Image (cartoon, rainbow, N blue to C red; front, top):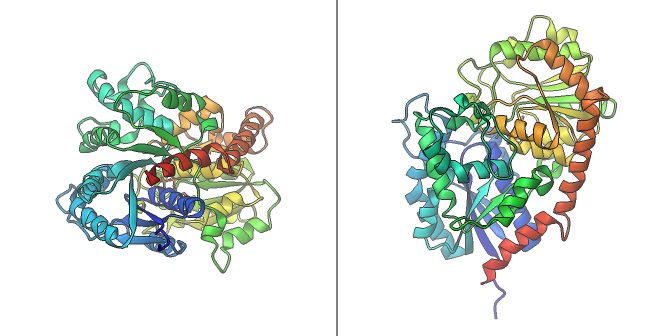
Length: 467
Ligand code: UDP
């Protein structure tokens, strides 16, 4: 007979490079280990140059398909990104169903995967008769534990999370102070709060939940989520860390910041970046600059224009700063630091930087992809969380496993300089964090090998496609 067609997987990536990148990595892993092909569905609202370049670099066998635009003009200007992503998904359900139906005609479509903000698309997959429907959580088990408990927390927590006297305790999780809980849950009157509750219910519709984490980084949460089979809760598979690799993003000519790193001593540079959407307030940006200078350490900083409206900038949808970010730096800063610092505007080839031997630390917003990239390369972190689940990530990484040093409040140049020096050269906390991260690196790499935990977990999911 004719050779069997490869299994095909459709994946919906809601806006944000932090969703697209790990889903693409999941697709690569399914392709290389299990002979699958995949289509990444993306929204019309995220057609930035960064995203287009990324999609164009995907290997054959991983296609992408941009959904037709939907009208979002009725949403208030200040609508939260979580609201925008959720509305865009909900309004795209007919288009997603149509795309999946067409895909079934030309491929052996075995599964549909969506990230957390796309749970409405399960309706589309059901309508198109796609056999298996998975939720992909691009962040960690702590975030999943929170989502799974959210209906109960909604019913029992009076007032706002940030006003709670006691931290939120979730099974197997590091206690999280209310003010550090996921940012779209911080204002119960905002539509994004309702949307998160909606997605919390949507999670339970999945046949399985794939999580981009690994046991060593949150061991107790992993044990709890694997052991306690609660009725109505899909099985949870830790399939991470799925991260970009350098070869995925190699560009020629080589980026100037990487050439600068080539000239720096091993492990001497701290990389400073706040992900694809993070923006500092003008005042914080100033303290950071002066703090880096005061630390005396070498640094490579992805500078983005500040935003005094909130911690997430317009860049979330479009990674390039609208204005020249360098004009916001303190007077004389560039000149004074030119021998030790290198500045990049808006977007850097981050994985190339983290993998570089000159990089010895990362001052990060604790976005989960950035965190995993750092751990896989054994780079210890200073935590400066901004929004989304970044504050809770910072708590879990600092207090759970000790992989980061948080910048203490209030964030001033002296405190920034202090933690940067401690991370790079300190013999107390710095040394402990560096040692912990070296251990986590080993565990992460082990899990991805043949027979490793992540490899086995994904194989278990794929096995079911044959039945
Ligand atoms: N990234 C990059 N260059 C940048 C900023 C981000 O390549 O200048 C990549 C980074 O390596 C990571 C992703 O974009 O893979 C950001 O995801 P993360 O979860 O860390 O943060 P988010 O952007 O979702 O806040």
